[in-house]
Image 1 (cartoon, rainbow, N blue to C red):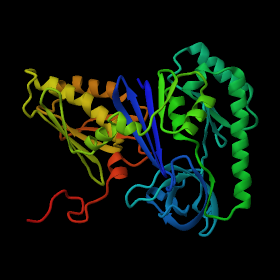
Image 2 (image 1 turned 90 degrees about the vertical axis):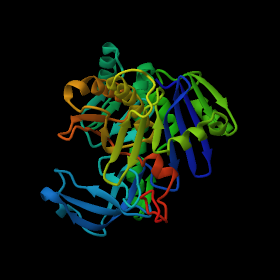
Image 3 (image 1 turned 90 degrees about the horizontal axis):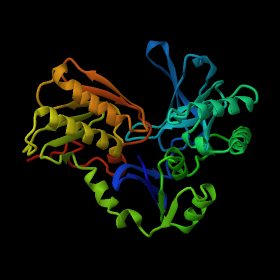
Image 4 (image 1 turned 180 degrees about the vertical axis):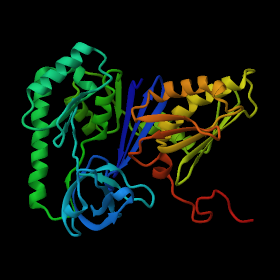
Length: 387
């Protein structure tokens, strides 16, 4: 559970730390000079691509330093697009390394209580609203106030909102969409049509039910937080909060390949271009327990590291000892339970024929390593140099 959020802004860089019971759970670092997830652009098609299985795609110039990729879905035909054509797109995955951002034509507008999906036609409710009566009431309220064909996602924070707040936000998000459409008709591609609001507000809304404190480093942000979430939790202003709370040191540790476990075991994390490899080593284990206990301890830490480092895509884990399912079943149960606490969807695929645990985590933003470091010009990413 997230009880504290730390926010620090320095120039174009915004750093946000999510904490629970004094431990760092998740870090997000946003560079305002790059196309951020959620931003909407009027882009220009530079190339059309033929993909596998008869699918098509386009490269889109959104003035991000690297062309973005648009994957055409089943309802779209490649013939409907031409090079040089202007299209309205939204970033769903930020640029990472040599790969440009991924974009979509299906726009979403995120509010405090709702997500507006103008190209959909159904209403969904957050699974974190456990009160079925409240969930049903919110769905009915939104359905009652729908105008035309549109879709909505009810966020967790809506559970504590009044009916008037919900309907008012529906109206406000529609106005934002209308503004984007108007700008798209007036602007020339490539241009930014809509910049997603402060990520701090998004994190506060997502963790509203457990959040007790927000720490910021500017008076302006303190005022903005109090205006948006008046009296919901404590707001503190702190100069250089990441340094004062030891979070800078925690980020340095999060870049290390080796993670030491409490009882002496070790985890090795290696990020490659194709997947993330994680190896569990018993090391000088002092727990006096079985391999299963070591693996279960490692499973808890691996889930934490995945979230902290924002590891995504294909992740392959080689646990210690036997890889037979009868021995690995309790370890998989622990891993799945811990990953369930992650707000980013992560699916455990199970054991491979080679005995490794495989999982897939949705990729939206670059990993912490990609944000805070760059490839070594001497070893070119191998981590080794010539003798």
